[in-house]
Length: 147
Image (cartoon, rainbow, N blue to C red; front, side, top):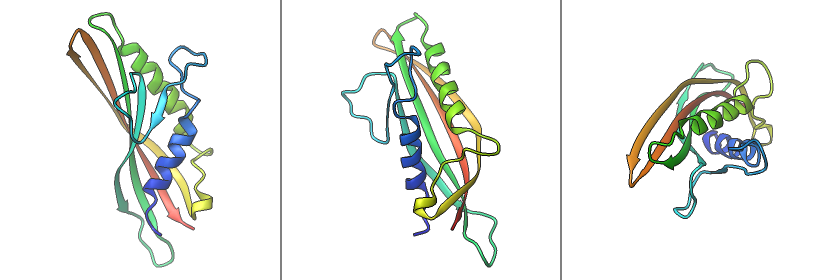
């Protein structure tokens, strides 16, 4: 199989589950690909975004895979809350963004991640029903080779 996005998504969910907190303690932020409507903020949703063949040559199969990580927080209207979103994003980037080692290990799925970048983080805010909702969208680009 030459589709790496679902392997990347699974590895990201595993990497972030029980490692991201809102308060620095043991109250972990929910992480998943599908977030049930019974889950309250904060939560982290991870989903596949795009895959493009890259660095084509005769001897290897290379992909540039983009995965989106969505951070959602809320607070009582006009009482802040964006800082919570920023802190969660910071924890995520510290865990998954690296320059030279510690990339996602997809070797058991016959893929090797050799570059990970986070080119964009976009923040949004909405005020509804006496609550303020904050969302950050982190695009992670992984360069992956089939091994």
